[in-house]
Length: 129
Image (cartoon, rainbow, N blue to C red; front, side, top):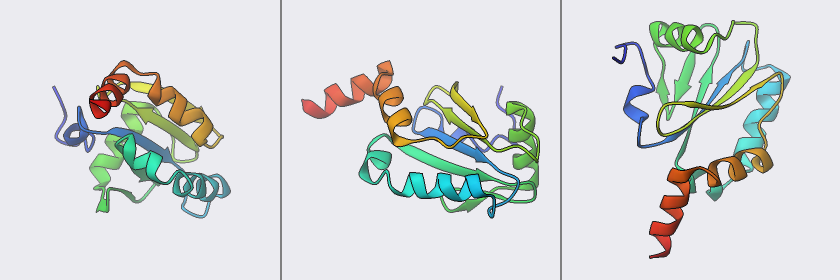
């Protein structure tokens, strides 16, 4: 059963999610991750990705603010402390597909990983037809 505090529930089967947990938006790793994502351009949207930025006191996703209870839910669910920089890839099925700690996620890591997933392969086949 999904918790009412789970902000990811509405995205399941619709989007892949990148959750970026950081101590603050000023963190060097967070700034580097934001730039890397911006550089991914159309490939990001094509893979139906949604970014969640999660800080100790605030968070946002798809231009929506996360409530404190939602931030706490995500920290507890994925076992990420307020001091950690962690990037997670969550598949459309809601499962954790990749976890990086104290490292940024690059396009070279992300796109081939997603493109190798069965659901993504089916999406690509459907687009060709």
